[in-house]
Image (cartoon, rainbow, N blue to C red; front, side):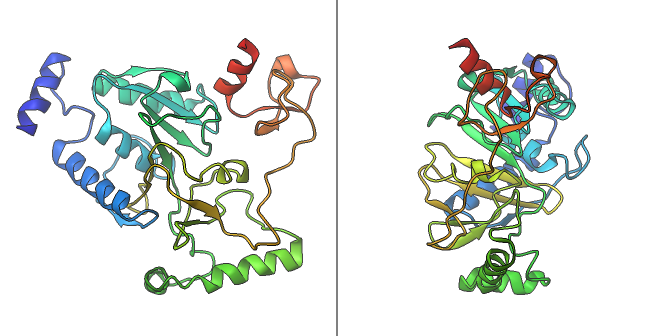
Length: 288
């Protein structure tokens, strides 16, 4: 039945190749891995990662998840560090939409699937939307536990002593964590997870989101997932909570002092130092 449906979709859109670039067997195996990952929040589930027309480490894992889920009635948004129009985001959006017939958008509210690299959209997603994050290194213990076997054992036992010791060392030596991004999180108070290299501003927004979050690491052949309303807390001591990155001024375009801001590159903001990283949220604030 599934093969017939795929053939009908390909015929309807005038294509002879596989619908959504990947063959149907690959998409089924990825969807099975995602179901396992959703059943055990924060757990790393292996999957057979395929070669994609993007360099590994540039979003091949997230791209495979999106292509396994997207259909012709979906609306897809792809962002790279908050920007809809970067070369990486534009190329992935074109591949997804041309091989599936799905619509593309730069508006967060319109999208049914949002694929992102290094940011979580600042416009809140609803229960009927899916967020796909690209992850280069899914193992949160990789800096402190050199052995993959030992890391697996520690995940099974819930023993994250090396991660806590590293955090204590950072607090004692530097007054805070060294990680500017990819700060590890505890899922449901039990499983340590790498949330992708999102800034600390976004790490603090992961808790109890109303939509599923799917994380794909193509190079490491791992998927992780957070079901809706999952408890996600950054690894931190009770008396030293994780703090967001500071910015020295408001956005030069919309004036926001609460958004995640980066050094300005816009001609319109040439005399100011900062502007919003999320271009859609910034545009929405200016419109309103």
